[in-house]
Image 1 (cartoon, rainbow, N blue to C red):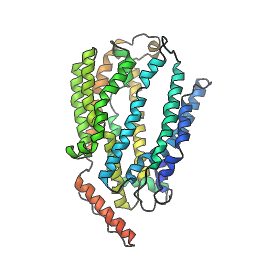
Image 2 (image 1 turned 120 degrees about the horizontal axis):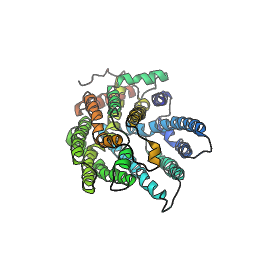
Image 3 (image 1 turned 90 degrees about the horizontal axis):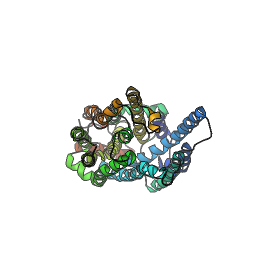
Image 4 (image 1 turned 180 degrees about the horizontal axis):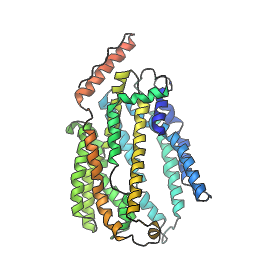
Length: 414
């Protein structure tokens, strides 16, 4: 729950001109990187001590990370007064984030190599610490390059309290609908992909299968991100892109279910089909950031206040709510299917009921979330006429304020 409050604090604190978010991405990364590495240390404590250690450390880590995350992604909304330019910046930011995610996605593959008793034979705890240092500390230090990005847009005076900064969300239906849709997308009968790959794929190592599936099926989407603006223009807007992604998800996952997976040929077919899903799916992060940036403009037009902090904090908040809902559902499913972690550690196969349900949950489970998502996204306003009208009125408002005149009350296109 700290993210919306932190976002409201960011919006509330007075700042120097064109320096609203820069401090959070300039000074926090080294500290966050150190905390990240510490979370993966095998500390010499008993079980209760380790639980206390990780809870306290995680909450401290998350407090600072939330400030940095708001600063980093909020820069998209401050990068330009024009929606089309912000979309291109969101596109390239998503490409960078995707590249980092792809590198982190090699973890299971490298982990299996490093822990192989016939090879290096590194302890699993040591592997996690190594990756915590390289990806956590190293990644945070790399993020310092974002400080070179200038803030172009200067908003009005902040609200006079954190509560009012938080309450400004009521003027942002686009963001509230996006957040609700993303949360409902996670409400589906599914467990982590690792359970399926490690327990059900029989013709190759499960961790290697998961890596190959994730890497190869992600290639078409990674390539498509470079053409985000052209694809969105062809489709007719960000809203239509989000809807198309879910329509393709529903149709192709249904086909994949009947194709199957447990042979090299079927596994390859599954990768190809999921690659098609990932083409529009890979563009969704750019769509979220672009729509969120546009919604900041809409709120400024209605209230005279910029709200990058609380608006982009909602992205992180929604991601955590998704993770929490997914983990809760997953826990009940594993309990219902009598998953046995002791047998897994001993190399003993899981029970027949567990194995039977992994495939339909893996491939069909997300369809339920996709249906919820589409229903909510359908209510979002997104058109060139609507965006252009907001930009035009904002431009006039800023010119009036700059000339010492009273701004005209906004009238939004319906």
